Length: 172
Picture 1 (cartoon, rainbow, N blue to C red):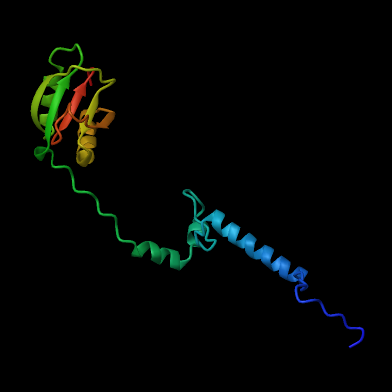
Picture 2 (cartoon, one colour; picture 1 turned 90 degrees about the vertical axis):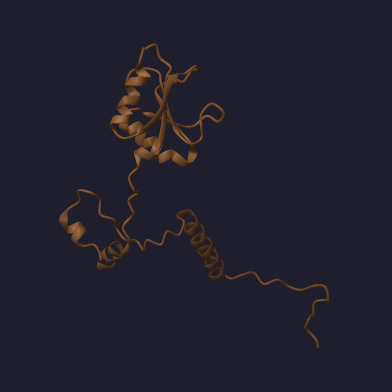
């Protein structure tokens, strides 16, 4: 065998990828990165009509999108709060004499079960309805009924865990 040089046992050549293979690898990596960045939301490039858009924009929506909206079960509205079953205590932290009694009467008028009223010793920053964590919806409803903007989870040790607590720092 003349003219033929064989590499020794430990010497093997490495074939470099051709430009087509290199570009394919780059394209796949780019696709994976784009998919990862966009989260792969899979909206299929469908346009979503903006509110107040032209009638033709909403008319051009695909029938599939309309059917998908129809198939969604309606969200169950939470049952209204049964105010009579919720105990409420009202405390006055202000210098306004009789404020707790007045607000307790207002809460009673709309159906809340007011079980006590007294003065509050402490430093609450503004009128607040406190609620146990499992009574957040009820606490928000009481705040709405009384016109109180601030709600907060009850302070453990200072408040009872089975009722809502209203602390007043000023007139409503």
